[in-house]
Image 1 (cartoon, helix red, strand yellow):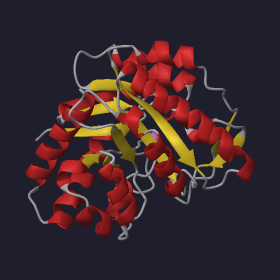
Image 2 (image 1 turned 30 degrees about the horizontal axis):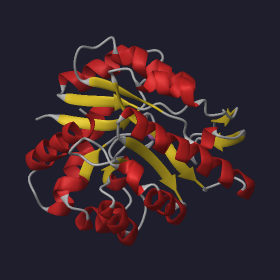
Image 3 (image 1 turned 90 degrees about the vertical axis):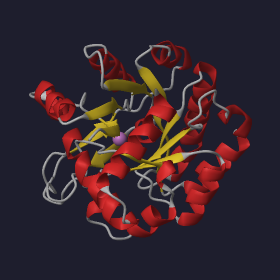
Length: 280
Ligand code: NI
């Protein structure tokens, strides 16, 4: 069975000691991966790592909305187990279009992001900056003809507004549409509006323990669903509280199989094909 973890971060510090083993466990189990950049250094690291593997590993480049201003983010807020106490302080980064464009043109780069809007804890006065930097990344995706990897938290009305305004720029030469909303946490109405624009959705470990996601998983057709781990964050049951890793994406496939009442093999096959259509 082949699986595709379309949103993970094995290039992060959390895997510093054993990233080779983590990647091997995933690849040996038939799991392909996209390491997602969140700022310039993690984007560059994702590209470098992807070049070390002939198959099964790609990268994205982008500036995450929480890295557009200086702010502290605790581990729980990022979805870690309540026992986790640490976090990180984002130093804030300006979005340099030309630098990101150069990175984005690398053949191992399959999407722009994660980019988007995150209003969960940021101050009101950072919203304008988040929007501006997101719009630049929408333009970059159009420029380099690659799909978007979108992060959105408590900001769906603004996100959908921007995407509708930029509808012309969302056209992609690929069959898979303009991109993916990762860790999708909007309503079924948000999902409908985003599907209207051509977007797909990736779901991760949270679906295995938060029942609220079952409604969304039933509502969205399998043709629009992808699998992710967002590792090292938010490990699925039965690994909750541990560091997440791409090989655990099987738990997400199994959850979707149960909710939609279809064989896990079919979930694996269709979501793998969806990922190929969008990114490769
Ligand atoms: Ni992520």
